[in-house]
Image 1 (cartoon, one colour):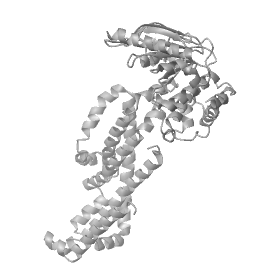
Image 2 (image 1 turned 30 degrees about the vertical axis):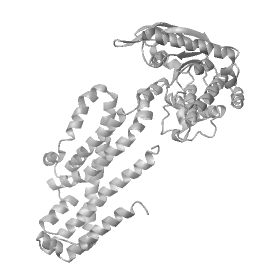
Image 3 (image 1 turned 60 degrees about the vertical axis):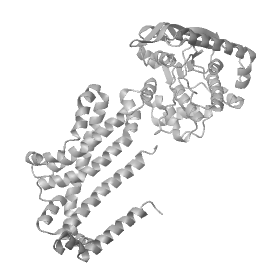
Image 4 (image 1 turned 135 degrees about the vertical axis):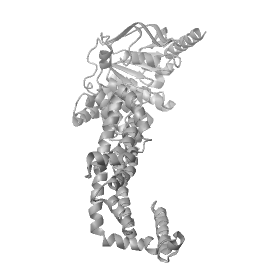
Length: 276
Length: 250
């Protein structure tokens, strides 16, 4: 892992990276319901530019809904969401890149064309788009797989391509919805280390949804624990700093373990409090 | 052994049996017919050779009707399906009618098409195109709707316009459905062309078959039918080839 980490650090800043430090996510008094079903209730969250916010909560608590609301894919029933200071859903959509739970790579496109989708959508010619995405392939350990179809890639590789596709979009805010949920434990640990290194090399404002407290704490600066539906914030925890680059060292650090236990506790309380 | 060996063996056996039964007169006596009404495969083959320029002339006419009619049906079916995908109102208004209309035997309106469009290629094209339109339109519409909504969301956050989502995600997703619709259409197209010719034509394989039937030219009738089958198989083969070249991710 540390070898890969070293590989990223030297790279030039990626094209159109989150250039605006000042871009942040701010959520005030957010409520959302589907008909009579209340999914989210009076939720407040703040995220500074280039910060990484983890969202954990019991399954079905509305984490993914919250992410789609932030990304401007849905409009909340009540309350305000601002991304980079703007609240209009179309502008939120323009400021956020969304990585869905399943990788959603298009099977008819080569890996590099999948990664370059955002550029192609903006009218960049195929050659230029490939060149730009290709630079990131080299920086992020995917060199040699540019022309592979998604079906030829392993699960971990596919997630990397999906993440690069999100990164290439060049948006200030990345919304990641349980990016590694479908991977086996070993690949998931590898991918967490890979993502931590990628974000260290190319910092962005990130909202990361996870059902795995350890993953959220390892990747985030701060973790918000959500209750069962309707989702409220029942606890906010800061990840211990400084954090070891090596993932195994980081997650077994006593300070890390202590915070993880507090998060688990909050999670349990939130789940029980609402079910009762 | 290639996957074609067994079907070829079955076909050869059937033709061989037919040859024996027809040339020995067994088939004619079982059917209680004059022997010349029951041609053997060898007689059909020689009729095919002797009438090759007549058959080729008429095959050319029918082939044009089939291919042009198929293309018209394809273009109309694809455009219609895309229209239904882009407008929910259009879809709600037309989709049920489109599915229901597949139950209507369109061939029965061929006579009125001749009244409307005359004896030229027009009514044949209309019948073929109508027959091809519905399976292609319905299958394509279903294919476009089978897109994963998550993929559309992903594309929207990657700044895709509605048209780009159609082009980059929905159209490729629908392609295998388009091809299965096109295969059904390709099976209908020769039927439509021949039926169009039966209603009123002065050339074409269907016209020739009617003539041969009236003149008891049974060997040439079978030869014309064999040419028609070859055209239909050719269209099928072209579609299979195109699908294999285009849909490479399955």
